[in-house]
Amino acid sequence: MPRASLIRIYRLIPLLLLALAVSAGQARAADSTPEGLSAIEKRIDSAINLMRDKKLDEGKKEIEQCAADLKTLLAKKDDNARAHYLLARALFQLGKDAESITQIDRAIALTPADAAYHHERGQILAQTNDNNGALASLAKATELAPTQVEYWLSLAYRYADLSAPDEAEKTFKKAIAANPTEPRLLGALGGVYANLSKPEEALAALEKAVSIDPKYANGWRNIGQIHQSAGRFDQSVKAYDALVKVLPEDVPALSKLVQNHTALNQPKERDAAREKIIALYNAGKIKQPFFCREQFKECNMPVMVFEYFTLTGERAIRYSFRILDDSGRNTVRTISLGSYEITTQIARETGEIGKNDRLYHLDMYEEGGHTTFGMYKAEPTYDQVRASVVAILNGKMEAMAESKEMKEKEKE
Image (cartoon, rainbow, N blue to C red; front, side, top):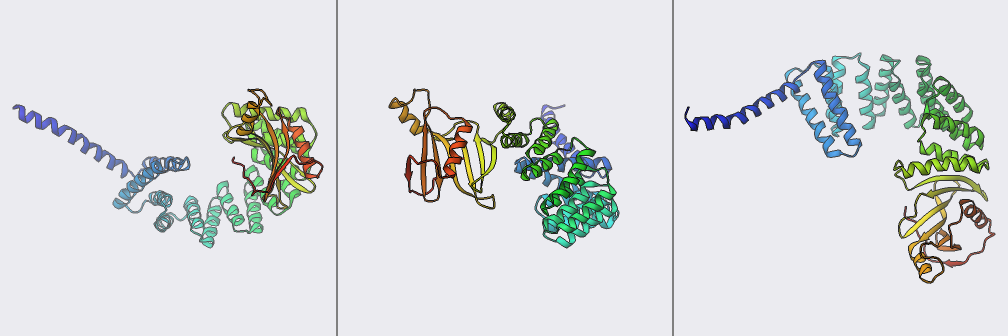
């Protein structure tokens, strides 16, 4: 064979391989078997997880490809309900709500008894603010699959989101009747009661939930919070201890143990729980620079205390005592123990402290001014700082210096 012909053949081989690959890709896209559709569904789920992990471009690109594959399949055969359902999911993730609803309606028309399709329709309509349509579709899903817990949760939580707690309560009771041994339903009912300011009813539901499943973490968490809010700190400790047995590295639960043991004046137990938090931070398992160390009231003012793990930045903070308004949501003033670089450096240069020491100061920041109440050549203990804060709030500690400048904001 002439050499020129061989060259032409060799050049054709990559093109032939590419054509075969495209053909294989089209075959996969047009695979309407249960296995083929399951593969596409897994791709959609993986893409959604990528988007949740803030890999938006990568996730969107994959979902777009899944949508294209499903459209290719449906162009050949339009009576595949599951393909329409999966296409609805993909289009919804792409923000194409109207097209998504069209596809899910087609899936339901083809297979009206499939609860998953009605549930998906309800979820889509909820996001498009068609509340009546969403409730009707979610209710239909629970009717078709009464033992599917997720469908009941979606319906009841939808009522809760629409500020219809009575309907949410009725829904959960129906769900529990159909699924009497499902702790999540009892736990969710407890949440509804808590929002209705019915703590005793909430506790009854939650305690039943954890009796069914002692590893039901959210049940223990909510039991602990209800007891803490009611001032039953010993009962709260029992609940959070149970939670930590299930989730040993649960930082919010460990923080609650620190708070409760503080309220019970149990420094040994308090410090043991705190040390576990510090160990988790040192192991790189906590990304937040602080944790909530204590919550208490002084002079009828709610106080929330945050402890910072390390002294970092030009305006480093160790403890931040945030005095809240009556709602408990807004900070009206802050008292903090800080160790700023500039004051520390000046103190070192003047010989006030050693060259490896730090200067600490207790300051109050509020609208219209800043007041310094104390300077320390060594870091005071938390209990010492707390006692000073209590004295400040009671007007029993004199200021060292005062500025009437606008409130400085701590950077966190």
